[in-house]
Length: 439
Image (cartoon, rainbow, N blue to C red):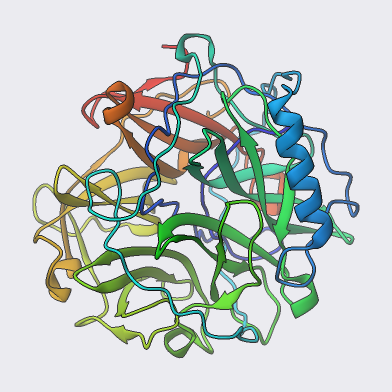
């Protein structure tokens, strides 16, 4: 069954335990109207194993684009809803696992000007979108799932035509092994969804998989960031980006900040434009540290900011003592916020931090404080991981709410230790009290 999810960049194929997540899950320019007064989840026809719409190399295949366009038409004619509940129950520890891989072949440079277009209240080029027609009272979690797949690391972008575009990591058996794929689906009401399409898997370039998509609007076009997944020695996991004019057809994958990451394993890219630069958060999948770089455009040149290691602290002013991943950067009421998935000793839960400065100086991006855990409720579908790889959308201008998308699971044994992930959503008026779908 298909339903939307957000962003975890993860590690190895197999049953390793060390986490590495996604990220990013962050829409820099959350398009106006990504509203979610939703309904129940629906499911598209599950892609058969080894028979999905595979991309041509690291780019987007013609068949995938054709299917996606057809799917959009089908959605306009209303796809019958299918309930997305139901999951195997088997408690297990956290999933993510780091791994080693190497840089991929680069694409041609694609310089993109920075508009400074952050989320809702940032200036810039956020496209105007139509309001969605969804009913929160009739929606229930999980609102999206897919038969045979574990879906997580969701990124959501509300298009100018009123279509909600959903991108996520899809774990399923492929070519005789569990692999991860960047997939997408679309909806107008969070109840019916177009058939999920795989847009990146990296197989033809020697990667085990691709995961952790994040989508932003910059320089008059859409930018997706993601990373390689799984062990493919001697190819440590690397960061990538692709561009699109319509949120449907994507360019080939281009290396992102390869001069800083070559030869080591890095995941969970998150971008934010400020003061004429792009700021890049990403995670070293071997040391498990959060890194910070800056550059004038997607193709750099990139440089390390200060120590390159942001301080991420609680309200007491002390480091949290946890590992951070799946970054999302949001400008809310004039203040930059950092959403992360934190673990050890906490197990894959969402935390929100605030920048100490204004974000105009490079060094402002090195200090984050006031961190606290998001109080997402435990339901039947998320008994093991409650709100992994969360993704925040500020829709107050549309209906007065913040919306949080996240992955939940009941076990961590299936799908190479990733578990039976499905997508849930909660909303809040103050970023403190969260109510799940239907409440």
